[in-house]
Image (cartoon, rainbow, N blue to C red; front, side, top):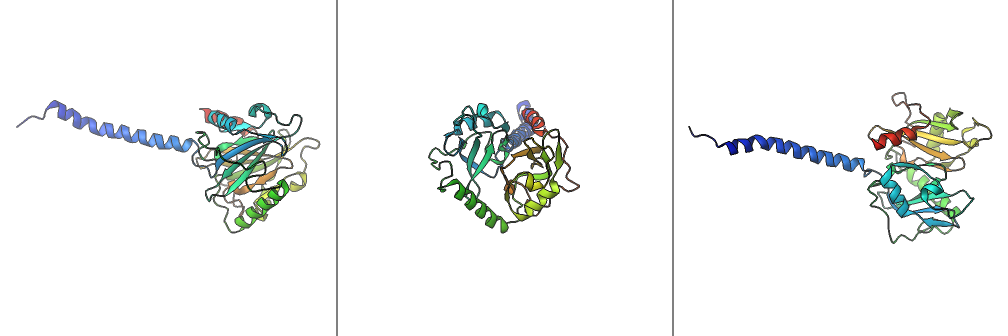
Length: 275
C-alpha cells in the first residue's frame, strides 16, 4: 500500500488548526469593533464649549479625549479652553440619530460625559467639517425657541414610540450629594411617564437632602454588555430619557435589576474600561 507523503499528512493535520486560529481572530476583531463604541445611537457632528455668546469649537479636542477614555468630567481645564472666564459653561455636542435627525446634548461644567451613546466614539472617526450650525444648532435662531421646539418635537415623537430603543436600562436614581442623597427612582418613573425631557431642581423631586449645597441627579444604568454606568445631571439642567430603554413606560429598576450601591461609580468604570 502506497504511503502518504509526510508533507501531505502534516498539511492535513495543520489545516483545522489554521481554520480555528483564523476564526478566533475574526471573532476577536468583531468583538473589538463592538467594544470600540460602534453600537451607539448617535453620530457626532460637532462640539462647542462655552456660553451662547462666547463659545469655541472643541470637536478636535473631544476626539483626543475620546481616544483616551469613555468618560470624563467636563471642565475648562479638561477641554483646554475657557471662552468665558468666571462663568458657568456648557459642552454642547451636536449629533445625528439613525433617522437622520439632528439634536444637541448639553453637559454642564462639573458633569460626567459618557461617550457610550455615540457611535464610533473611541475611534474618533466622526465630526462634520462642513457643519455650520452655530450655538443653537443648524436650524434654530434663538436658544429659547430651540429649546421649546426640541421639547415639542421630542414630546410628539416619543408619544408614538414605545421608548424601548435606548441603549441603557435604568437600575436606580439618586438625588443629592455624596454625603447625603436619597433614592428618587419611583419619582423618576412618574416623570418619565409624563414626558421624555424635564428640567431638574429641588421642586422636581420634592426633597432637599443636603440643604445649602449643590446637588445632582445620578442615574445608574446597565448597558447591553451588562456593565454599570452613571449619568449625572446638575440642578437646573435638562434630563433627557431618550437614551434609556423603556423610559416612557417606567418599566425599569425592578427587583431583578439591582444597582451596585456605589455613589462614585464613574471611578470604578474608568478603572474597568482601562483594564
